[in-house]
Amino acid sequence: MTFINIIAAIAAKMPYTVYRLRFFKHFYKIPKIKGNLSTFDSLYQYVINHGIKNGSNDRWGILADKYASRFEVERLLGSEHLIPLLGHWENPENIDFDALPDSFILKTNNGCGTNIFIHNKNSINRSAIINQLKKSLQFPYPQLTGQLHYAQIKPCVIAEKLMLQGNDSKSLTDYKIHCVNGEPIELYIFSDRDETNHFDFTMKAYTPQWREMPEGTNPDDVKDQPIAPDRPEWLDEMLDAARKLSAGEEYMRVDFYHIDGQIFFGEMTLTPDTIFNKCYKPYQRAMRYILDLIRKDSQLTTSL
Image (cartoon, rainbow, N blue to C red):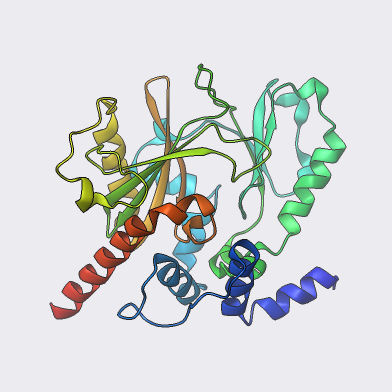
């Protein structure tokens, strides 16, 4: 057993400590984590506790799996909302690079930030890419992040079509829709994301009606504001897709892209990075708004 696997075995038994260490790494302080829905004062407390509670939830594993989740999306939305799949392999050494197009994207299904963007396969180092993918597949992501439901995933590599928007943007615009009990509550729009740095991007926040939420506000603060003039004509379709995918889950973030007039699924996230991503720090009122809705719906369900 390697040293990292020994650490992972220990970490699996103490997920709260793992989260505290991860939080300290980003914010240089130890957070209050334990409690219950009635005592939480931050969304990250809920996300951490709800995630640990569902660490052995098989369905959560399917939804987090970047390969298996495709079948759930196809069932609920249709295959036209899936980025075309070019192949999948359990062993990166079996990737048939010659059969793949000149450009594509490789990623592992069992973690975060493992995307490898291939713009010209004739200029890549195939051995280096294979080794990188092997390391990603073997990395004990569930244990070392506290997101134990990822341990339910059977690791593999997938290749997808490299999607482009055809404008000056550095990356696809990512529409991240936070849903509570199957209803979209807030949208965070990520753009100009750096291919080599998963956390380097610009961000704007909106209500489902497309009222912009400046930093320090929540949906109630802007409910009397006019709808932003750039409201997408396809927004209702995307929101409806988010409702279908998040139905049955107390809290979920669903991500989409809009490319050439078509809505494409990105991922479903049950433990989103609102905990550690510093870009959300100015949006704590909005995050608290989500927590309050979860709490309200939970109390309503309990009283029925």
